[in-house]
Length: 222
Length: 222
Image (cartoon, rainbow over all chains, first blue to last red; front, side):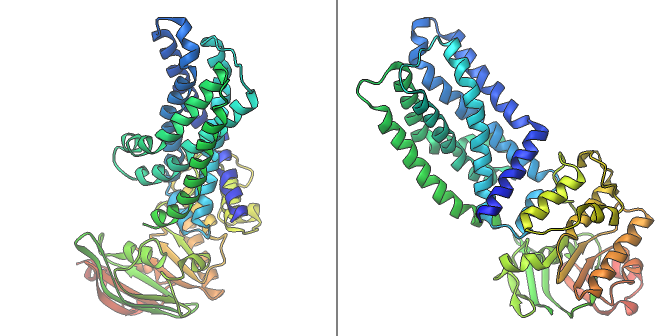
């Protein structure tokens, strides 16, 4: 299954490299939210305090664009049906797609971070490596349920509305933990709370990445 | 080899297939004829394991098709209405992706030449004509070495040389021991590779016998 997961991931990234619609869509959506919140905030001294929350709000909203698009390319010429009927483990399809979504979101978040630091006047007082770990695990937390719900909603009418309705309530714990961890790392963390929030995101990832991989095959066959 | 026993399938309350029986040995071909909505594609999709039957049993070499679908999908080649390709990738890239996913090691340039496509052409598939898309779908199907070949209206969008290509591919696969089921609106062309015929109307079999004795075209469609 690992070999097939790698091949699905390779296919996803190759298509994205040709198209680049997911990366650019998520980036400009996320950037627009960061800038709008920055311009709408009356006091610039507040900006560093809300930077973490704004980053994750932007990523959560923008992620639906990438998740939606990852299935749009599959349905254009019936490739999803082709995948189902090809000798590929459904779990490999899930993990390959979820990993690709994680990579794309992490890439965009890593580009948005310096912009956030510049626009919001943030001085990162904590460990930058821990900040990157929060970004990676937080993006994985968005991708795990999003890849499954993307499949469920992709064939439905109004999929772009249905996906956030199903996905957002589920990812709220992970987004809250990621926002808190990011804020603690940016603002300084004298009480050492960031590792605990990181642990919450890690636990969320472990649960969802394992459960969704099992459920995905059943939903794909239906 | 292929046994379809009392197969029925419905969409909601409407029965699309009602008590269908079919038996094919290795190297034999059967055409499915009938008007639009008669159940030809539904039968093909049931045999391709894209749809589960609501009643009845299908076996391939004595193995239950739906129960062992994961393993048997390696032995079933299905050419449906859609090309099952990624339209941002070129023909060669598509074949490379699908062969990697299935663990096949074909000679891709030779395969493209076989279906009349230029292996040095790097245009994405979305620039292809309908007939060229059909040819790439055929090449994709030939990545497998199938025991059961399912063709759903294979001559659609193909020019006369394309039809001859489809016939020669079907003959070659049959000569290697594959059973062939073809849904078509061109029974005279299909009769070149199909010894048997099954006429369907509103999901029910109205004729089951040699294709040479198939009632006149107009009678089947009345």
